Length: 81
Image (cartoon, rainbow, N blue to C red; front, side, top):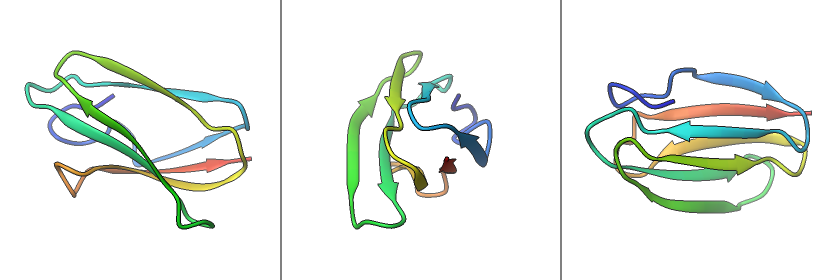
C-alpha cells in the first residue's frame, strides 16, 4: 500500500510466483517501476491514480527494487526466493 507518499513497508520477502498488490491510498498519482538488481532491467507499470490498485507477480528469484518515478524517496526492496 502507498500512503503519505511512501510504501507501507520498506522490505518484503516473497516466493517465486507471489504477487504484490499496490494500492494507492494517497491523493496524488504514483508510478510503479520494478527494477532487478542482477539484470539492468526495469518494468514500468505506468501511472497509478489515487485509490486504484495494481498487481505485480514476481516470476523469478532475485532482489528487486520497486520505485515511484514521481516520488524518488518511495522505494521497496523485494527479495524473491
